[in-house]
Length: 273
Ligand code: URA
Image (tube, rainbow, N blue to C red; front, top):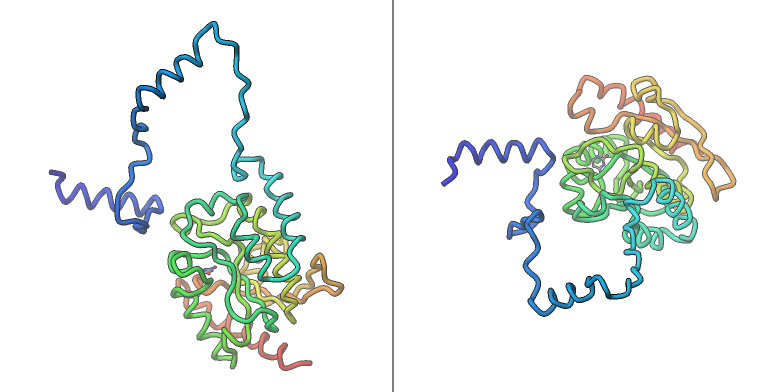
């Protein structure tokens, strides 16, 4: 019998490693040795391997896209993203995309929420545990704060905005997205902008800002500023506003007044025709 303290320590270690959710009722040991092969099958394998047997041509096993060099995944993401002519098509392409390894550990793909073609497109970082479970962005605590901030400037999340993230799958343990993960998802994010054609985009947090704008000065320097973004497939550049991520505000409520100024910017931009 394992003492309770050891179990508690093991669980703490799991959580520290990002394993913070049970996704099935039955435990599965993925490191266990495979079951022994039936005798006839094993004998056939030995016969094939006999030294005087002519060598058999081997067929290369398909390589999962996520282990191909990242440039291949980015190139295929670009090609697939360009093929989509509607947001529905793009959502289906993203759900089937095999070039980001996070898809393997996620429960759901998290594409977008709100009204497609709404005037404001909000882009966050990546789904967390709640979003992964539900399959929609910003439904957890930071999403609730975002909803309240939008309501404070008279906007309804479902009616007035379209919301997505830089990544479509949850990074285990909510760790920071890697550069490769961002690179593999970015073509789809740019296509969301092109297909949803918002009046402007709001980038929440440093990850979204550096991914979309390619600026790395840090969000405290960049927040509250407007940029013009050239988007493949659109004739005109799209205005982009940078602001803090709601989860940063949950941890650092003293910064809410700066965000409030950014949200007033959103409001006045919407009122100006
Ligand atoms: N944080 C994000 O950036 N996006 C979500 O969808 C949820 C939390």
